[in-house]
Length: 103
Image 1 (tube, rainbow, N blue to C red):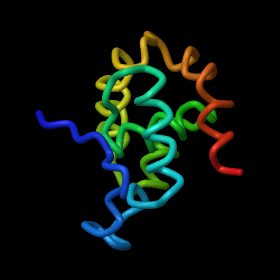
Image 2: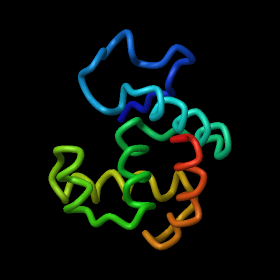
Image 3: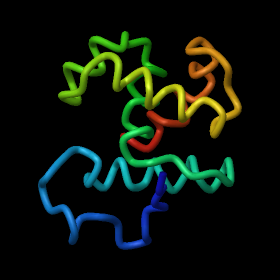
Image 4: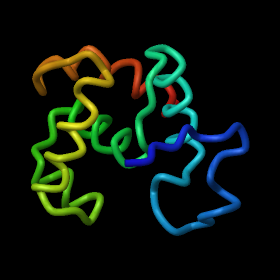
């Protein structure tokens, strides 16, 4: 499976308006998290982790991102080791970091 690190200019030019992962906020969050952790999160994993850290269920996340709850679970499964967490509750420690960049 290929994982892409967001380039400095972001994906905007390649995917203009196609989905939420091309937004500047998501790109900034991706760089922050990947720089801090030295690991790669896909843009979709980042979106799912951000919403999960806010306490949303897989179903609620899926409704917002137009994904099935099972796909959301898969993204979390792949992101947990990259973030060094084992449970959804541990994502709470990333909540403040992820939401600081929204200001």
